[in-house]
View 1 (cartoon, helix red, strand yellow):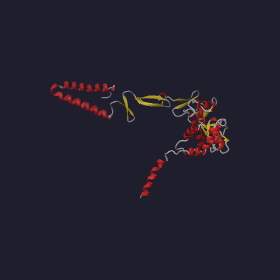
View 2 (cartoon, helix red, strand yellow; view 1 turned 120 degrees about the vertical axis):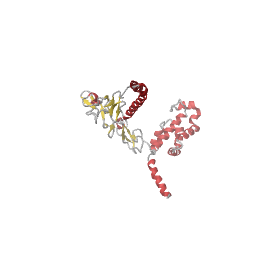
View 3 (cartoon, rainbow, N blue to C red; view 1 turned 45 degrees about the vertical axis):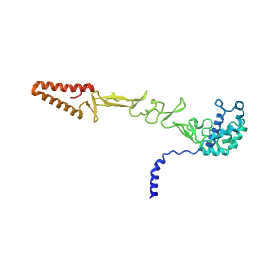
View 4 (cartoon, rainbow, N blue to C red; view 1 turned 90 degrees about the vertical axis):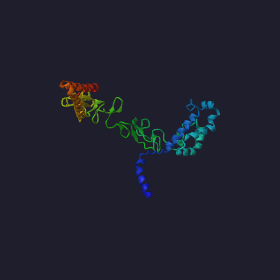
Amino acid sequence: MVIVSNLVAAVALFPLLTLIPVATEKSKCEVCRDLTKNFKKYYDKTSGQNYGGGNTAWEEKSLGSYARSETRLVEILENTCGPKDYKCGSLLEDQEDFLEEWFFKKQESHPELHTLLCIETLVRCCPDNTFGEECKECPGGVDTPCSGHGTCKGAGDREGTGECECHSGYNGTVCETCSEKYINNTDTNSCEACSSLCDGQCTGIGPKGCPACIKGYELHETDGCKDINECSREGMGCGDPLEDCINSPGSYECVCKKGYHRVEGKCQLEGTDLTNFFVILGVHVVCGILGISSLGFRGASIFFAFYLICIGAFIVAKYHKEGTIGFW
C-alpha cells in the first residue's frame, strides 16, 4: 500500500518537476575560462581600485613586497572559485602549482593567462572565433563569423559545434539571407522586418513594399497599404441611425448616440429597459395614490395638479442626476 501511495505521489509531482529549469553543464573550456577570468579579476582587485593590471613596475613600486607575496597569491586563490563550484575547485587544485609559477615567474612573458593555461597547456579551448578539436574557423571566417549576423555556437571551445545561431531576421548556413517576412535593405545592407500592414511576404521597405494588405487596409498605388475609413464608405460602418461610427486604424467602432445605451446588442433610449419601466410605473402609481388621497377633500382639479407636480418632481430629479430626461 505504501509503494502504491509513493507511486501516485511521484506521478502527481512529475509535471511539476518538468517545470524546474535544468542547469546546463559547463564544458571543460568554460570551467577553465571562468577560473582564469576570476583569477585575473582578483589579481587586479588586490592591486587597488586605480590599477587596471599589466604594469608590473608600477605594481612593485606601489604595492611593495605585497605585489609578489605569498599572502597576495593565497588571497587571489581563495576567491577564484565559488563555494559550490566544484568543477572550478577541482581544476584549481590540479593547477595550483601552474598558477603559482605564473604568478611568480611568467606574468611578464605570458600576460594572457587564459591563452597560456586553457588553450596552450590544457588544450581545452580555442582562439576566438574557432571551434572543435582542431580549432577550425567559424563559418564566415574569424573576422566576420556568421556574416556578422549571428553567433558561432561554441566559438573558442574545443567542444563547440561551430553552427551559426542567426540573429532575428536572418537565415542560412552563415546567416547570409533574410528570414520570412524580412527584406534586405540595400541602403543599410541589413535585413529589415516587413511592414506590419503587409499580408504575407513583402517586396520592399515599409507599407509601399506590401503586395497585399491585412484586413482593414487597402493597397494604394502611391502610399501602399492605407487604412480603410469604414465610417465614410457606403455599405460599410454601422448602418444604425442610433449609432455613431468611430474609425480607428484597421478597424472601426459603433457606439450609441448620446442619450442611448446598448441593450442586447441594440441602442435604446435611456430609461426604456424593463427595470426602468417598473420604476416609472411605480412613480405613476405612487403619484396617483397621493393624488386620489387628496381628491376627497380638494376636488378633481387639485388631484391633477398634485399628480403632475409629483411626476414633474421625479423628472427633474432624474435630469439632475443623469443629464437627460429620457422616456417617462
